[in-house]
Length: 348
Image 1 (tube, rainbow, N blue to C red):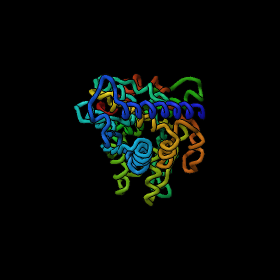
Image 2 (image 1 turned 45 degrees about the vertical axis):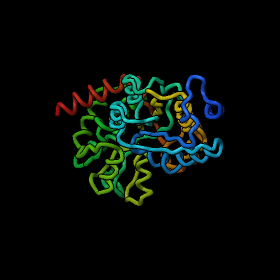
Image 3 (image 1 turned 90 degrees about the vertical axis):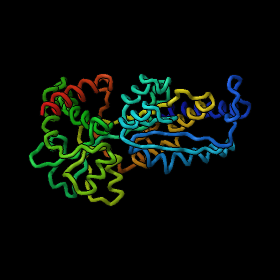
Image 4 (image 1 turned 30 degrees about the vertical axis):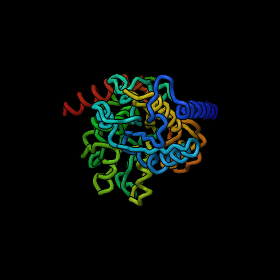
């Protein structure tokens, strides 16, 4: 992973040089005076739980570094909501320069919908900027004795689950519950047991008492004392503990690592603005930014040593990714739509 980090730094350095040249001498095809403006704004839309590291760490660090290098003042504006909602807002035409989303299915929607002409997978690490496993948050002392997703199906358990319709976290949670049985059965027998995976998800869903619109809304409901358990991102669970909310974190033996893409929203963007936004996008893979992600409990993708330095990260026995299902191109229609929505939600 260290070699990937070196490549990222080299690309960022090249981008800085290119952008400084544009800001200093202009572009032959684009002569607007705003290209050499003393100030510039980058508008970022993101999924709800990305806002803390961006606002408190990454935006200020980039602003300071850029002003020191170029003398230009950069200002960030941000809007954060459930990933599906943020995607819909961008597709409806809001002014946005960059999107940081919960699932790359939303990134694909932006590309297909014409909000961007840039394929996010050409960015470092195929556009994935960080990751986090899905975990279960329970009440102090774990009174329901929840150790795995299967325990969420027991009688009397009241479960909070982010809404899979509006929330990327909700879709990741579905895949994690369903996929845990796929992974375990493949390890036991060499074959995935789709029937057992379906039965687990169906049984767990019977105990869902609320489907908040995003991971952050689900966390807020848990804070208010609703439910016995919450399926959410590990980073949300750790932030709950930082707020001194009485709870415990259960890491299922087999659970999914959610992966979060970055998309440049370049529809109608000038070359100079694109150069600036691309530079910031690539900065998100710099060591400074990756350390900031880890500080706020996202897992780094450039250097596993950064994750090893965070003692509060859970050790996952059997981690898996959406690639287990053939990527989001197959996972969404086959599991979210066909299994959950058609066979479980509508059927019940």
